[in-house]
Length: 260
Image (tube, rainbow, N blue to C red; front, side, top):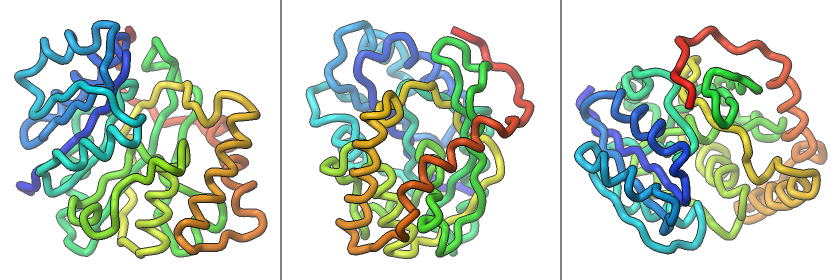
């Protein structure tokens, strides 16, 4: 249970949200290495981070090649046994998330874990739009359009060392490509934590418009191709369709979080 967990937060002009993110990490308690990688914010984000520097292990602010380049930079800085990513717009759903993650990794046969996710309003963390309830992974899952919520995805650091980090060339599908590569191609054993781990603010680029969704679909196809994998004819169409149920499923009752 003494496993060190590295949490990576990437930011760019996130002054309106990063305080909540930092506070939610602090609430997880000891044994967390929090790394903040900023892309050169100009809106006050840096001042907010500097005001909480005592709770942050590493902080860098400089131009980067985008969000996945920043994530890779953070992974390179991490010294923990387990690595997770919590972006500046997101918060942990409860103060025991890291505890649950540690408990999942007590079993040495698992090298990755993930849980559920709530999509919430930009300014009201208690207003839920979608409940992304996941399930235990099986070998056929990705072929049926499934993927785990990336913000709830944790892996042992040795997995990144062995199988690689994010591929920024995949664009907005880089998180999908990473999990496809790790879980399906390389069969990294993963365990599902049946709890909401993250509250994620709405507004993702891949779903902002129909045009962006079409672009994301092309990137999803590329994610399979670069890994030498072939999806079923319906796989890529099923992936966005699976989201419909997330709007219809009632989320669990969680303690309220203070709204902005």
